[in-house]
Length: 95
Image (tube, rainbow, N blue to C red; front, side, top):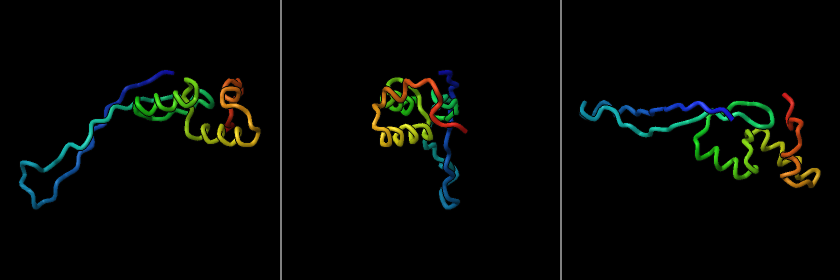
């Protein structure tokens, strides 16, 4: 998987009634990466922690939300094991 690191700052402006010295508050510094789905090739912007959780769930593969739903439906419908479905070379979802 190729990844590009990004860094987003979220700033919230304080109300006009507060002193100018605290006119904005730094809320979060979030580093994100672009993750490419191993099933369909869709690129999603995610945190590293989220990417790791998804890979743990899907045997080391990055699976986007759309393909994750398709995998769940396939498991329920055909009662196949998750590993067998993920090892299938064909894309799960055709766009």
